[in-house]
Length: 325
Image 1 (cartoon, rainbow, N blue to C red):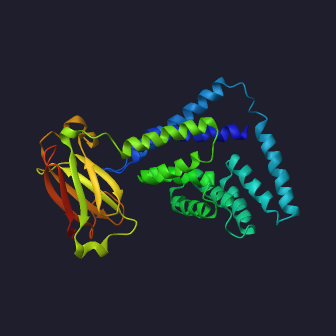
Image 2: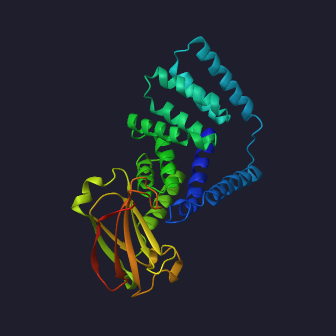
Image 3: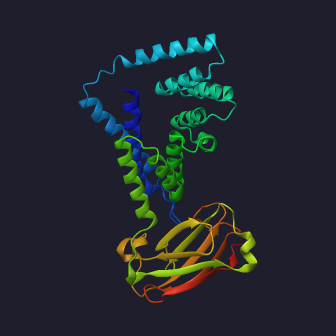
């Protein structure tokens, strides 16, 4: 039954992610809708759990006693043999199931130490327990543990799943897609496979929306030779379409800070719906390199700008040749 619960939780989290991704993707000048995204995911999780509890004929009453008995047995094992790494690992899993997350973290940490400090299952288990505490201050530590788990085992499913979710939360859809695709290669159960396939399709639609030729903005972006050495490693390239008269961005794309880059935007990318970009409209196209990976402008960011008539000007070159004060 534990496997079923874990699988159901994964499916519910992925379903919630489908709703939350559009709310979490960074949009220029606007904060992520974190509360709305969290509320949507919580509603799905609680709603799905409530429906199952109401409709299921499974007896849950005996489960806590069974788990407690298993924990007691494992505590006895590690008491008799503190060097039993497998028992510590199982103990971490049982404590996580009981939502005893501090105890789970300690058990996983002990298992990892006994394994030489580089055990993928223990590292991912610690990270999972930290994330499930709901303490946002531990997210960075959990993320580091998950990356260490993937270095130890690139196919660790729990590490792939949680790093995919964290990537979605930060707006890094390319990384999220890569992690979910890697999970697919592990031949998961059919239900999980279906959910992953659907999530990848959703990410693909967000990364590559259909092009509206009547409002196409086609730019080849490169950087001035004098600034090439200042391209931030691990940063992000943001391409904005703005009304020269001012106001919020009409459209935006976030890409890796790799140049040159060919970028196409259109009304399909509009943040304001069908009225965002009109055929033939004169717009300002701004390309900005952010070392911090944030859509809001920061001091020292590199940027360039040109005017463009949507759907009319064809391919244009945009040079990043200025530095934000």
